[in-house]
Structure formats: structure tokens, C-alpha cells
Length: 153
DNA sequence: GCCAACGTTGGC
DNA sequence: GCCAACGTTGGC
Image (cartoon, rainbow, N blue to C red; front, side, top):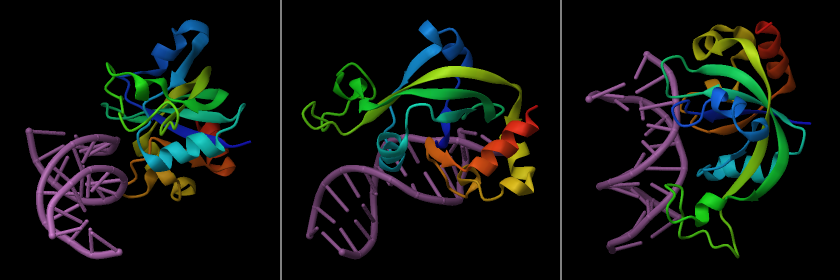
């Protein structure tokens, strides 16, 4: 069992969008960073949990929890010429990019803001808080997961 | 393999 | 909109 943090820009796709999606489920597509892809493709397993993080918005932070319900499969947007995530170098016979399916678990009682995460000494080693970190999919330790979850209660 | 130029992320 | 910090591309 692994824990994750997944970023999404709420203008693009927010936790509310997921709550209102069919079966409260969506494909996590459009990851175009190799390190993030490797986590997603090689280490994300069914039943893993992930924090849903809102980025590039007025108050960045963790807003909810989702569950991985389908492990990695080729990202269909990479084959879609109409998509901004289209990648001509990703052949269907040798896909370069991958997606997983996630299902809504809960909204946190309150947003745990990036500022609050930074101010929590117990979280200072979190990948998210490392200088220059730009990963949209990253692992999170069980300790950090529990710490964040309990502060949300 | 080096590295300059360019593009992107994402907080502020 | 600014800009730091990366990641990618492509000439050499």
C-alpha cells in the first residue's frame, strides 16, 4: 500500500469536478513528465490512496482524498490529435504516457494549505515542499500522510 | 556528451 | 505578470 499526492489545477479539473463526475471517477490523464510517469506506471497500485492537491490557484493546498481504482494503462490523450496532450512520438504500439483511474473518497473538512504544510516541522522533508519540486505525481510517506490527515480532523 | 536556448510549472 | 527552478531539445 502506497500513498501519493496528485496535483491538479482547479481551473482544469477540481475536486468538485470529480465529485460530480460519473461514478465519482475519472481518468488521471495528461501526465507529461517522465519521473511522474514512472511513479504512476510502475508503483501506483489498485487501492492506493492519494491526496488531491489544488495547484496554480489563489490558495494552493490539499483538499481531498482519492483512491486508485485502475492501474496504469496507455494515456488515450497521447493518441488524440485534438488534445493538447497529443504526443506524436507516443505510438499506440509503444505508448510513452500512461494514465490511471481514480475514485473520490472524501473531501477534507478543511483545505490544508501549502502555507500550513510548510509551517509544520513534522512535514519538512515532504517532496512537495522541496525547493524547485514540480512533480505532479509524487509518493508520500505513511507518517506524512497520517500527520496531514489528522491535522485535517 | 555538452550545453545554450527554450518551454513549463507553479508560488507569489 | 514575474521569475526561479527545472526538464527537454537539438546543434555541435
